[in-house]
Image (cartoon, rainbow, N blue to C red; front, side, top):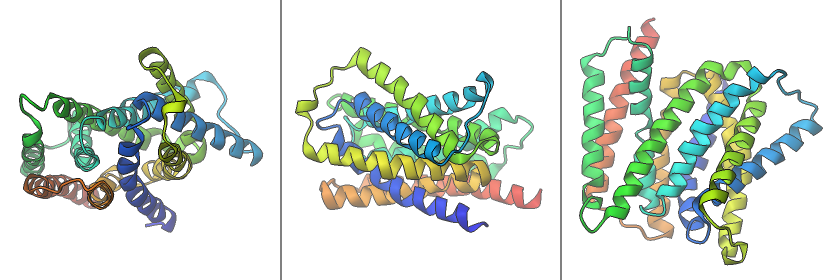
Length: 296
């Protein structure tokens, strides 16, 4: 495997594992869609200026801008926007663990797109284990006194499905674009759509935003967006989808640890049990895909 792809993978694993904590703290004083919209719009502008200075050309023709718009909508508007919205209601660790189901959704979506693919017992077992783990994971959050948490769980699952669709689509069209150009266009389109949604649905009061939230927004703009989204776009366009999706295994571990260390979020028995079963399930699903790729 090329060193650049491995480096991109490591960046995505580590940096995006920390973003759940940053988002959790940020939405305490930021409106969710403003937080996400400002993040990606500014990151997109920074990348646009950088690429212009480097004299890197952008695509010509309207049709070449449709894929970046669709990817930005799936990954950033519904995917990341859903994460930010959901973290108003659930812990950063639980959000990351639910985002860790992305490989399962990728497998299901890939099978639906390519119906000729065989659904083996191993894939069925992995999917069932994944959903069993999710049930154990979120069971304490679902109850008559926890409707807010239930909204957060549903929001995260929608975000994970949308992110999976966007990732699969990126793996199909990513090679046609310079990775930095594609990431820039994703962020510009996604950020502007999020700001439009925010302007319609939520007021923005900059004076109410804490200094800590502004610093975290800066971290998300520069490190988690400009650098890491570019790395993710590069990785998804050049590595196998099954292997690349395993970054989602590492993110929850980092997120839960940081949530426990900094926010003192509890790591209960159901989180441990559910997390282990989910990781086992997505591992089985992706192992099947790895074997099929190696033998093809």
